[in-house]
Length: 140
Length: 140
DNA sequence: CGTCAAATCACCCGAAAGAATGAGTGCGTT
DNA sequence: AACGCACTCATTCTTTCGGGTGATTTGACG
Image (tube, rainbow over all chains, first blue to last red; front, side):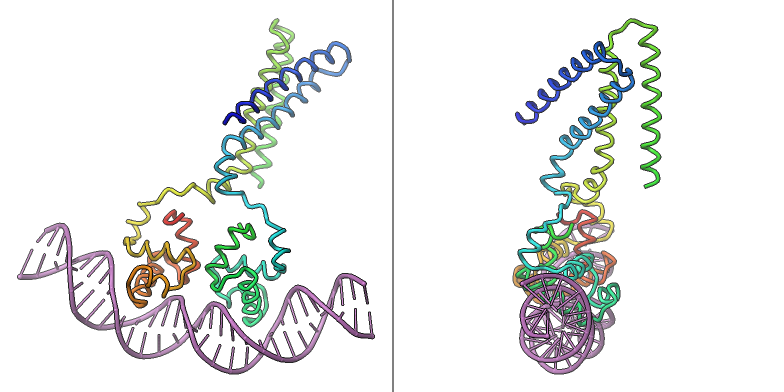
């Protein structure tokens, strides 16, 4: 919370600074007013986005990491692309046969992939696999 | 997507309009430049916040509502407490037998509960049940 | 060219899961 | 007392999962 206040203060300071600079340049150079206003608009749009994310973002970031795929976990555990696909469909509640149909492969193939997945995720049931995958940010 | 583009276009139009108005007032009245720049800043900060929420807000609200138990859904679908318990354990990746042990009931009982659960949730697999239950805010 | 990993598929087998049906018990309401 | 409802359990049967094993193909890399 203190950090947030500090950041707002900093933003305010930057605001003042920017305005000074604009004023200065406005007197010295001969660029149009619109240009500077455009700059200000751009800057404060960015600031607004940032503030917006700050405000609501907290819940978001903490509880829902907005899903940033964890590539590290994937490579560390040696999970292939295809396995990830299967994992994703699995998480959507599809049965192996349905996954097979969707990926245009045989049921056996899906089984193989899921088996490998289970061992790579150190689980033994698909429900656990889904859980763990979400914890590890492998799926949203 | 088209709607988003349209909204951006609208925002741009408003931007131009605002700048025209500022220009006009700048010539007619004698308020300071800083004041107008402040106005622009304010406006675009708001715009930025709005844009920021547009981008990330949707996912946030939908995906993670910080879990407030949806009692309405429960009663509407006629889901009992016991069924909810089973649902919860199910979502933790437990097998039916494990759930049975945890609740001190027989495997068959758990099966009955889960069967009823599936029909009440209009699904046919436990993975789907978990998904739907999360969507309906019946489990975290 | 040999090697290795990924992807594909097959077969077997046992364990879970799920569907269908029936039924007993306890508890609160009418 | 009679009724509905949640909870419990059982039995039977079918489907799906998951483990284990082995095989082929393809593409990348040294």
